[in-house]
Image (tube, rainbow, N blue to C red; front, side):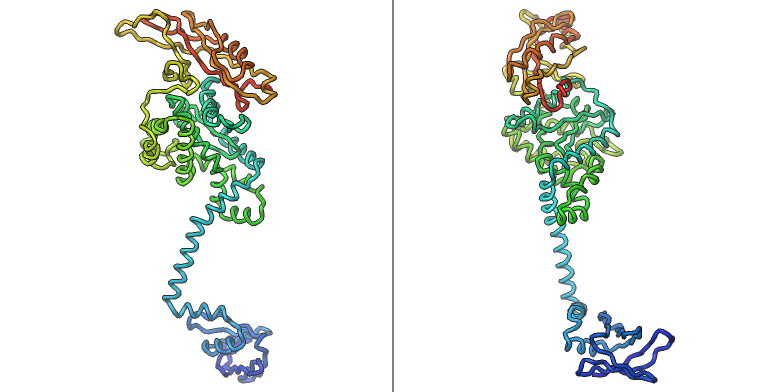
Length: 477
């Protein structure tokens, strides 16, 4: 087989016409004006075919032959079992229908991998992250948040109002496994709560003040627990970097995740979890609330309140800014229970008492009982419940803390006309060892007295005092 081409040795601008003969002995003979070369076919470099543009034969020593005899070269290479891949590519190139089908298939495979394969891989890798790395990542994210938010203005009782809901939701788990609740102030405008890696839930003061009942707080905590259970924080980090996901899954080197998670809080505040994750957390919340006997309508109520806080224009960093539509989420929860009203409800632990009034300024409202013999106030008189002035924190009994025992005491007391507490007694507790500390704590509290018919009046009240191993301010170190 002989073909024609132009030979150039790199020293002349004009090529020299030559003939190229492919011999049966697998040698290639090149002849032209003053040119006589013999090269083994195996030593000859051949460029891949691209349409009908010229091909190049690269000779040992740097010479190049340019030729348009594409079919002859393909035949010569095929007889020596060379150029099969290039030939297949050229075959697809010549058949546009097959090429289009192959391209579509590549697109579909890529899309399937991105939308189904990578999320599955991210979920598997996220659940394989050691707790120590996840805690380190969570602390780094929390530090970044605290640098951009203010310290909490909530008192101890208001904070315990949130922590008590974890006891309701996770009562079948040891307290050592409870998430750590961190409180921050967001300038009075951003009621928000979100979960971080390392079993951390960040709650803004504004959210606690917005919630009108314990059930509403419990509903949001159940949602955030869904994020923690599924490790959505780590999954978000992994999904955000394809290279990180692939390298981590192939090498098993999970330590590099820590540096990536420092950006997580800003992603959560600005973009939030994906809507897929939010729906998954909603389903977890609904199941957990149903198991614990918490009305599912409570979630709808707090969603409506949060909806009302969203800005009409400008950046929206509120709780709902990254979630599915409120109507969509409300339909899920309303299907299980009637939509709750804005009337606050008491926690199951206090179900034998009168309903709790709405809290003021974010402080968990004790349960008020009208004193015996009280008369209805005169028409137009403005009544008021006792308002706290000073509320000491309980001292955690050292022996119980050392033994990793947590508990709760319901304390009954009277706020007299001077705003002092009297007749303080523990009426119910999970462990008698906490009762003395709870009673001593409440005895130190002072209030603005209740107003009835325009005059200070004594008022019987109840309040739960929670001793939590995770987050109690005065617990021994």
